[in-house]
Image (tube, rainbow, N blue to C red):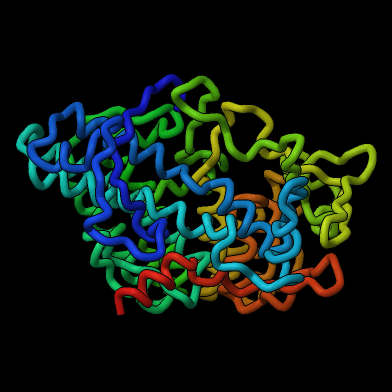
Length: 444
């Protein structure tokens, strides 16, 4: 993460994808090559807490590539032309039955690690005197923000399956709850983090990498926390709550649309390079019709995809071609945005439309369109028309950022998603991972 070296102190059990069918306490062994969780759960030093904090930031990136490529595929936004794995194009597109033990379940299970990491950090803070109570709240606010974000990613792919809200004791996790209860639980975690950030003083006791420039104090980091809480409120369809949260974020209708916290990467060890780069075996293409349907002159297209001299083709299990290779990420050190001001402006437009303020919704839509080099919106000012326009702008503004499938699902529009190949389907969710099923069967 931009020259920062990491020490990862994590538990042997990675929370929600429990990594085995039946885990017993007698199976636990200490790895002599790495510190145990126990080493930080009794009077951890500040250096250990700092290592946990920077490890929290690093593990927040786990699962990022799988998640974005899975939800992009499910929403028929992008396809993964993977030369070694046809299930990207078949199973995720409904051409073969979905497999709850396949690699793509990492879109759920990989986010178990940042949740487990947050719980370890919080437990360590509760059993140390090496930092002040005010400083402890800074670490806790960081942990709960990333914990809430990871839980939201899990819920996005699990949807009506729900998620487990309590895994503080990984051997006694709570049962998964409904989608509505899951959203409420995530909101609670984020709210707790916001309260802790309020009690953290003027500065963190630890450093954050360059991707968090502008968010390196508790007060500014809270704006990031509130932006994720705003996403949750949007999914809850609580637009009154969303309106109240908007002003607590880094939303700026006149500001840089790319502003926001970013995951940092560095190809020089001990860090890792950006995992979303196209390679010789993994080529992420845009669904061609989406690009062809973009309005003429839309500047967003040129920043998201690169037209190829000859179409790229895929023929393993299904045949499909696209002229457009994604170009969102081209360098090994390219950062990946977590949430951007452009998304916040579009959320503000959606809130305005939902609350009957057509003039404000139109004004905000036009900010996005002007930045994209397009003329002002001239359509009707009805609520439905404005919402459809917001969804379309979100498609192009937030392309390959993990939103299209979720957006269409929350408005019950999955049936409107274009299917580029006969027989393809839009799945509503992934199945509960096999390890989760086995755990519940063994622990009724």
